[in-house]
Image (cartoon, rainbow, N blue to C red):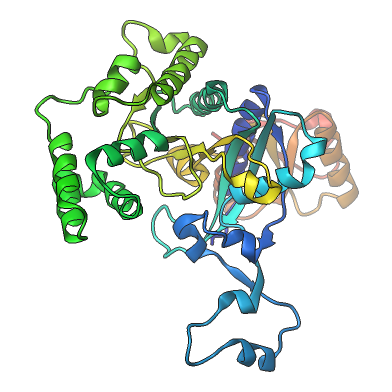
Length: 428
């Protein structure tokens, strides 16, 4: 959890403003949910490893005797007996609860924006924080490929607007992944562990995946079938994205329903972004049959956002058609995409305030307070952003600090100086 100096905060707000503006341009509406959710909802078995990282809130009014009664030295501590609330670890679980609560007040197809902090008890390291901002867009109520296409187009447009053009999105379908593992011979009981291992493919390679699966005691014939598929002689060409490429990337006999859905997404994205379809440009979509994503609530398409400047994901998401039904008692199709805000902010350079009208008034000690405040008010009324600073012996250091904070110009103010006498000078 971090503090942010003014320049850092300004840069973050500028990035948030761009993301919010682009999301809204694509027809999404912003909502807000509480930072806490019920303990049972956060630990319903749908949040994957994030459930283990949740910050739980001790029950109010629970005294020492109550804690001792809930803790049995002979058994593992029941955290649920001590906690009834927790800080949200993502924005998807709160959205599902929000929709179930307010469905009657929302359109049949609801497009939401959530931009807010979440909390996880991570081991702090570069790029991983215990409090961080997520920027989510979700579409609830649409089971067609249009929903995925809208999310992907909005995300790529937002990345372009931030100056990070050239991004791509890896895409897969959990149904295709399950079908593929079934075709290799992995049992339903084995699959969760197999997916955990396959998710490490980028780090340990195909050989490492096979070795780990064999060490876990997975079905030998299934492991051999997977090894043979990953090491087949032909080189997998992940582009151009389309029916032929998807079928070549999967074992023979992939279900038409799944392939057709993936193809429809690609066609819609290509239609919305014609510049990506020129002779010199590649499709921003990349089908990856081994993309897993670890969240337990994904039921269909899954995707991850990549950029050539870095070797890690800048965001991701997928379809979670079964989650809302847990709260509503009726299944509702839903799909979402989350931009990795913290990672994107770290990629962007430059100050956070590009307003050319921001200025610093450097005044002499003898300037009357009333004159100074009146001058500042007049400049603000003209549309300027104004900071007032008393002149110091080291004027250079004062101006360097102002420039670092995003101010573009300054003016010196002496006693009885009027607005007409102000001369603005550049700080850059």
